[in-house]
Image 1 (cartoon, rainbow, N blue to C red):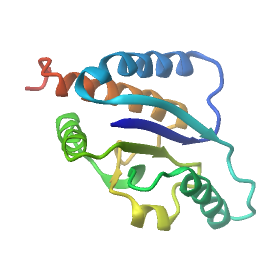
Image 2: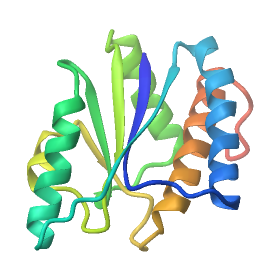
Image 3: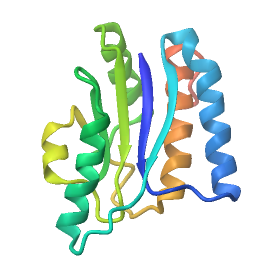
Length: 160
């Protein structure tokens, strides 16, 4: 299953980018052994719409235009479900084993995701109720994708 990260906004050079890149590289190397291929990060510019609703709608249209038919969509959103790493690994493993070929994990803009995307998503996932800077969300997502690959590979998990 190919996994793509869709992110609103650009990641600037700096320590956060270096750390995110490190985890995405680890995932890219470990994922194929368990049937997960990292297809990269698609960055789209933040909308310049006048209102939050306009910005969310425009950013949702950009994501919709890039979604392939049959892709699984996971949105990162503070209103989403809070899952453990093992639960998320199990869900992604089930999708892979069920024959799903593509998964998109989307990081929204500063105003969040449009309701139409939340309604369409296969999973709305939260990294907690706190507000996180987008740069750190990328780091945490990269780390979780790497962790999912190691869990699915059967590596000992420190919480088990």
